Length: 103
Image: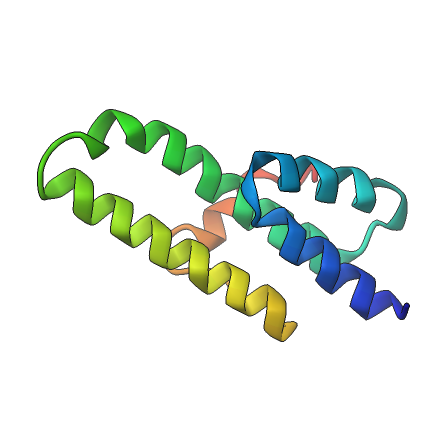
């Protein structure tokens, strides 16, 4: 498997639940693939926002819209990973890259 393909697989796995993120993180510890790191950061921030969002999600309309926006961003990140694009998700992508540089 080519190095780019390995990074792509790791990036895709990182978007599939917390367990997928942990597996992807462990897989990338040895490989240190930049593409995978990029998507690991984004997916981590989306999952953290989702957890914090549970406080708001029960509020009708506002919470539902927030949940929908986060879900759309998650789909976008997953699609970018599948397509092999290193593209930031709207609003939060820059934060993810800044806050999680340790990944």
